[in-house]
Image (cartoon, rainbow, N blue to C red; front, side, top):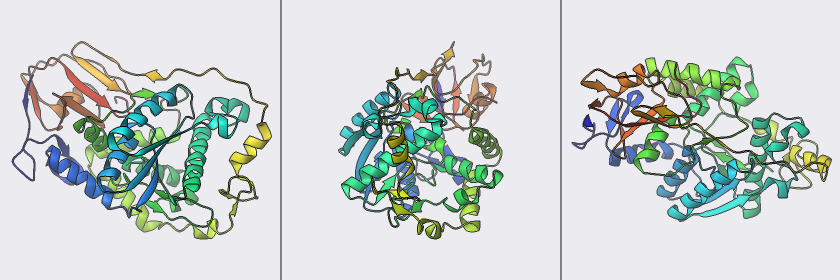
Amino acid sequence: MKVKRPKCSLCSKEAIVSLPYARLRLCEEHFEEFMKKRVKRVELPKRVVLGLSGGKDSVVAAYLLKKVGLDVVAVTVNAVPNYTKHEADVARRVSEELGILHVEVYPEELYGFNTLHYKYLKRKPCSLCSSIRRHSLDLVAKRLGMRYVATGHNADDIASLALTSLLKQDLDTLRKIAPVEEPYGPFIGRVKPLFWIPERDILAFALSKRLPWIKASCPLYEQGSVFADKVKEFLNGMEEKWPGTKINLIKSILKLSPSNDKERKSDAKACKYCGLPSWEGICSMCKLRNKYKGKLPKLRALEPTYSCKGEGNTFIIGTGWCKVLDIDEKWIRVENLLKKLGLSREVAVAYDDRPLPHDAWIGSWDRLLIFVVPRVSPT
């Protein structure tokens, strides 16, 4: 394949990524510096428990937190047997390569159930999984005497949550949107180091650093089944036409609704079983454990979904779909190729083990790796 890469905006090296919202093209070295600066915009504590799921976001978060000098303990919660076993395998490998402590948590041992029991517990699977993961991470942090839990939520997640909260008039959630939630009483603090980094940049960074991450989908998750997925698709379309839309939305929300949750938190008590926040003396997870202890069946684990689809000369890796189109042009810009394939900007393209900027030119191509961001499908 013939490739014409643009030059880095800050030096004479070839660019591996283009960032339209920042009006920059960056080489590998300057891209890492850019990512570190974005992470440092968040007021990071010195020690954190990091929820390391093995996905690209948490893997990149682990890499960057280690690089900026934090003391990190990585925790993988085996909430969906089989699927999260694959997560744990990746998380363990990443932790070993970065030299950080890795801990695995098994919800069935802690609570007597996992996410597969959602029907018996009369909960939606994603909601139950979120509760299990959050409580488990907080519990590990409390046992280790650490005051903050870091998560891999990125700018796309934050923008989607903000707009979803506005549309649903969920002002309580809106008030909690912030890069850092300070610990208060029985509450463990929350840190989102990727708060100012869009998802596509995280994907491109993982490719540039050859970081391993799980590319399978949870067997309980159905694409487009969540309201927030539709909001995310809308924001992706806006971002493609008007770069910077997501970051500007986050900035506006922070100005209009500054985080102030202490009044609500002041009413919370420590759960008499686990010591984490509760409103009635017993937290929701401990209530579920006590109510269903010994009453739930052993369920068969489900296999994860692998959405590696492609045919002809285009190979798709990740979650998503793609239609293959014959390209007649001798040379074509990457972003134009993506449009012909029905894909948005929320995609990272790689060639020769390096990401390709969207404004790069390619010709005589035979095989191209297109990495599709989870929850993004062709228009």
